[in-house]
Length: 134
Length: 144
Image 1 (cartoon, rainbow over the protein chains, first blue to last red):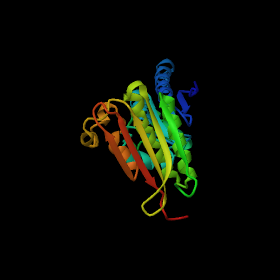
Image 2: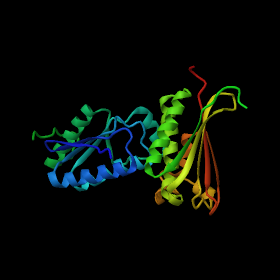
Image 3: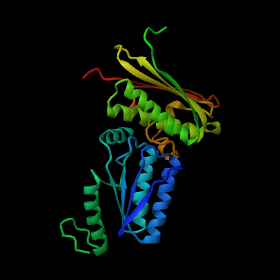
Image 4: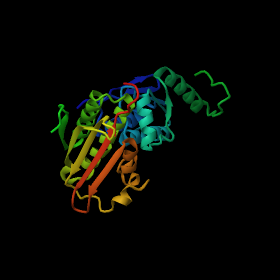
């Protein structure tokens, strides 16, 4: 079974979802991310979905559950690289990715994640404050 | 019957791999028929939603998908996909088509979401009679 490798860099976990992921593999990825968050104490997750040509209701729900679950484990999640055609389809399908932070690409996603993580550490949630160095 | 050669494909659905298989074949055919990226995504997603219902609810998670090329009302190229199973069927189709009904029970975004992705959708079903859902999408005439 093709697995999604999860890479750990510092206190971040990065996973790139493969193109033809099935429901079981998506659920496995979710479980594994939660286990790794608990084991490593990582505070940020990047989920790269740029290879996905399709996000249906099942995958969409998985993305939302990862983001919400990770937050309960003290980590921030950014989903990066949703393809334009996929975004249109998600909207028409009626799927709301409520509570899911997204970024256009992994560069922007990393920048956003670092900001979110810095604010989690300092407990400072104001958008205007400059985040402290860590 | 048809003068020109047309594409028709039968995809048996059995378990989760059937979902991935059916949606990628539907996308391939849509691409061959000249559908754009967004329509390819709509069609593949609709197939994913409908075949997942088979895997989740039909007896033994089995059913089949037929993907075929059809001509639209203005003779534009189109794709027709028939998703059928011999599962428990839908007792109240009107109720199932109501917004927000099925999403809470795990039926994906349900049938209304799938309907929005396509140009046409027809449901034939009844309690204990299995389900046949036919969806169609026509290619936009603009461009080429």
